[in-house]
Amino acid sequence: MTLACPDIAFYDGERIPVRSASVDLVLLVEVLEHVNERNQLLIEICRVLTRDGVAIISTPWSARIHYAPHDYFRPTPFEIDRLATESGLTMIEVIPRGSTAAVIANKLVIGLLTALKARRPTAVIFVLMTPLIAVLHVIGLLQIALGVANPSDPLGFTFKLKKISPRQEVELQDRLHKKISGRD
Image (cartoon, rainbow, N blue to C red; front, side, top):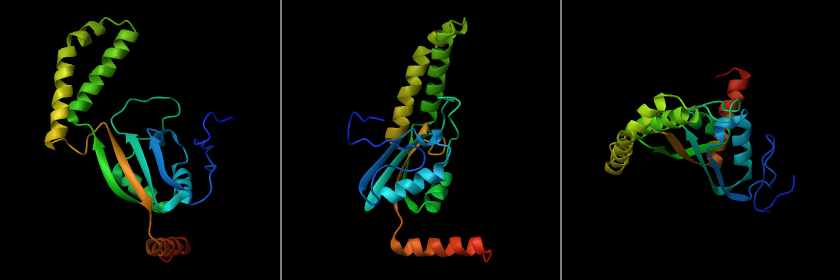
């Protein structure tokens, strides 16, 4: 594969083609849900991050199936925390994106676009709902601005991860060794 930009490295599903501990920032925007081997990718992210490096990963939560058949999961913060820990990373921040009103508005917009694309008679109903959709979007923005958005039902999440400390790494290795040897 020829790269148009030498600063972009493509992941082949096995190894990120950069040196270990050479990357300050890894950014995955709505990618992780399309990766079958998530642990392997997070292990690779850990490998390439510098000691102070950070990975920022965004994932959908309330989203339709997209890029089928390569749309595998919708992770909770608990699942990302588990995957990160198993991969030598630790979660330092979880940011919910959107609000309940934004989720409802998003679903209505998707319904409108789907109906229009299929030229269904129901498209008229969705077109008539356009003012409601706009109001829901405004309510969603207000919920976020006022800090009253429901963090457990957003459109998606953004996760900030970093490498675990050397002390945490030793503890993780001990736990894994005990688990493998059946002493856990």
